Image 1 (cartoon, rainbow, N blue to C red):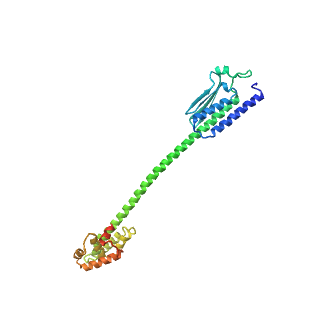
Image 2: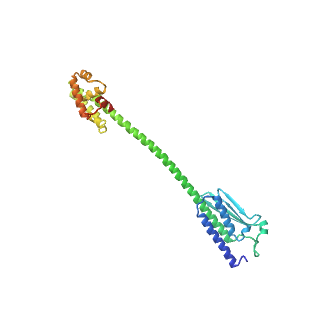
Image 3: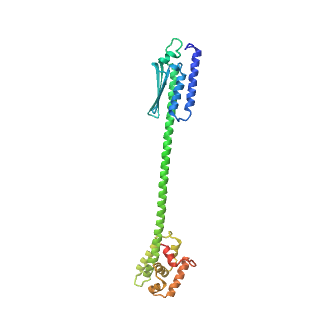
Amino acid sequence: MIRSSPSHLLAEREKELDALYEIAALYSRPLVDLQAVLRQTAEIVAASFEFPEHTSVEIATAEQRLAGGAVGAVVDRYRSEHRYSVEKLVEITVCYHHGERGRTDRKPDGHRSLSIQQRERHLIDCTTALLADVLERRDIDEVLRESTRALQRQAAELEQKNSALREILSQFQVDKQNLERETETYVATFVFPHLHQLRGSTTLSASDRERVRQLELSLRGLTAGQSPSGLKALYSLSPRETEICGLIRNGLGSKEIAAYLHITPVTVERHRNTIRRKLGITGRKMGLTSYLRSLT
């Protein structure tokens, strides 16, 4: 068959179109094994040429290089390159050879020597561009996967930090509540009774008594609205009852309290009953001493 005949050109054109279809189908699949894809690409390109038995194909990427096909003296060569992922390069080089295989296999018909045709060069250019697109998509996918993994690691680390921060804040809230409770109990038990006595003293001037009253108001507002109900109940006690609570909390019995305050033990017991009622622990098995100590 003469190379320039319409039927011959049509047959060669069909081979090239079939090759492009096969390459497009090959590149549409996920890129798992680059070496296998390069080998199949080289086989498809070589088979599409007019004289595949005289053809060698070399494909080089940034990671791998593959070469195969005919050997011997190079008669014609065409090289196509395409950049991908900014700085990377893919190259496809196709050669026609004379050699042992050229002498034993089919030789070109007609009078024209072995030469790579323009349509074949176009096929190489298209294949190079398609392969570059595939490699660039692979690199982009890898960057996205790595970015996803990095974001997942950062999210896990952030969650750990948030968990630790929540624990710290929770402990801080507990410590804050304990401090407020201890402060309020201390003030209610040990400070207010003395302030009440000062306000009732006849040796103080009116201005001094007002200063004492202002001091008492300031102390009451120190932790107002932040106390457990048990501590707030202390404010319902009279100064004498509050004073007795402090003595009970410090471990004094009724007779000791009576002697300390210069009142009778019966009066102390009456105060104790009133205190239990105001604090809402009447009928409970918990003793008054234990209850008062539990508030701090």
